[in-house]
Amino acid sequence: MEKIDLLISFFEANRNEDNAIPMQKYMKDHFPFLGIKTPERRGLMKQFYQKTGILEEELQTNFIELLWEKNEREYQYAALDYINRVLKKVNVDHLPLLENLITSKSWWDTVDTIAPHPVGKIARETPRILDDTIEGWSKSGNLWLRRSAILFQLRYKEETDETRLYRYILTNADSKEFFIQKAIGWALREYSKTNPSSVKSFIENHSLAKLSIREGSKYI
Image 1 (cartoon, rainbow, N blue to C red):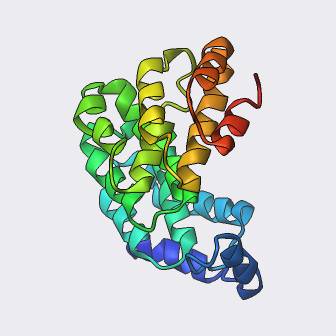
Image 2 (cartoon, rainbow, N blue to C red):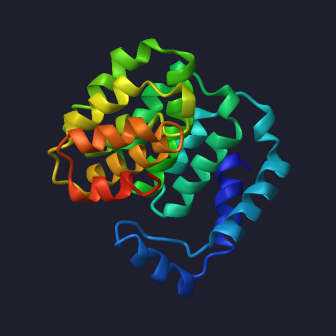
């Protein structure tokens, strides 16, 4: 049995329509759900990893792409779980794949895992993508790429490129998009844990959306 078929059999055997309805509503009806809650899904993934040994193999991009093509949202969560489990194997060659994941079946629940984890790792290890790729994301017509550009340094702490972070924020400061305003606030809030005085000064000296200011000022 192919790995993807095994995982599908695990998930289908645990389909729960009663759970699926509220899960779908929580995601604004953007995606159908199998109704597998997070703890149960993680347990199924653990069984899958043990059964297949996939974590010991090279990164399986085709496996990720097949999961992304599936309708139910749990399959995208499974793809992200797998990516995070093999994060050490993710490199710059996988950036086009990640960009495709960001821009397809897009919503905060997937993008907010991809941006700070695999993309953040690649950007730290291969700085040339900052100007080659992420700079373009910050000005993209796709709001999820712009959100990713704002959030990819989320876990950088002292390694944060402050100039770049603030530039991407200012590039998007006039956006009326909730998810951009929220990303700006989130990025500022996280960076304020490392450099509160810088963030305080930035907020005081620039025109930002009220939502961004409220979120960004939480720990200042």
